[in-house]
Image (tube, rainbow, N blue to C red; front, top):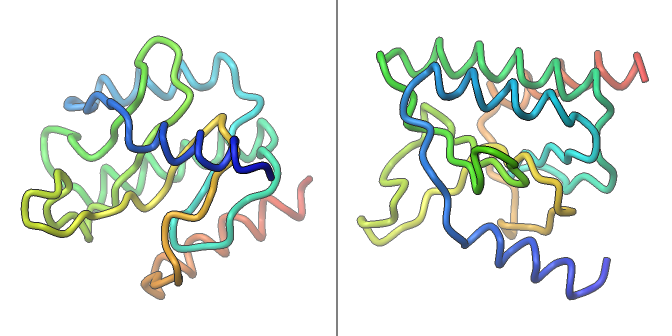
Length: 151
């Protein structure tokens, strides 16, 4: 991958994002992504960087599974843990771990990275060393071992 693409991902990641505050807005965002389902990378920030975009079936299953997880683990009447660069034509979506929020805005002095990034820009490492909780590793592995066997 060229340095231009890598810096493009990082620059975009640090750019302006809008919060998805209501669960209905998240439903609308997922529908927008499903309209153009090709070309999306699913980057679990604490995992290996994906080299290719996922197929449509994998993306749709990721959306279903992630939506279910977020609603179960973030048991509030609002969302507030998903951010998108453009609600109408998204190219990057940050999905935060409901169990590892800290201060997402960074006001505490330490920045909390999202758990997953959906991106049309080829991802570049955001962490030096994975520190993934085992529960999510099992979930992630089960999600993608099923999907990869269907490809």
